[in-house]
Length: 280
Image 1 (cartoon, one colour):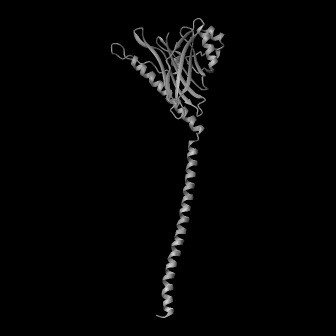
Image 2 (spheres, one colour):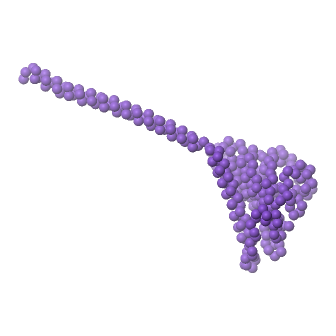
Image 3 (cartoon, helix red, strand yellow):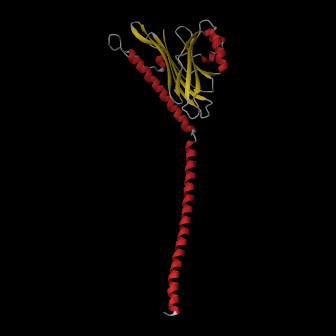
């Protein structure tokens, strides 16, 4: 074999080997660049997803208000269902025969309630700071006094746990002269459907009840405390059945409450529907 042929035999495999090495190196570089590109893309997608989650977590005031309004309407409907159920229980007379149901409690019906029982309703909504009390009602009762409803919510629970709301409520019948002396004429309602309301601080409530307890003719009806969750309806119901003119009627009061705690836990958006049923 000549030297030329021998050199060619050596160079060709070596060139082929070096070509493969170069191709592999270039391929490796391409793969590394592709890997880097994919990592960058993944990072961009993760950042985009994080931003989307932050946007979704940010409360929409309009949407939050709509949710609150829907919950208030649900509270009203549940209250109406409860009233209808009570009517259905009373519609059954002792002899097992059905009596005619009472008419729906529209505003006109409330102003001229048929039968021996007067019915009163109030609707109130307010944002309360800790230890504040919502006062509503102000109806004139058959006995000539003014009936007021006091609702005091309290926030309980620790961060990270379901937040509970404890509700303390009281119904108070106050003589007209005591209302005037205490400067509470703004809570007077001349009809049986009331929207009168005010918010009082703890010091104001403490001073008010100290005066009420020392005043003649004031009747304070304490209600049991209840506990509900943030955004969930709670109800206080204190009724007693009484036979009047041969028929059974429920006398007492019910208070439906829907609390909405603010994100910083410094206030409660409170919706209250109160009902009072008294013998004429």
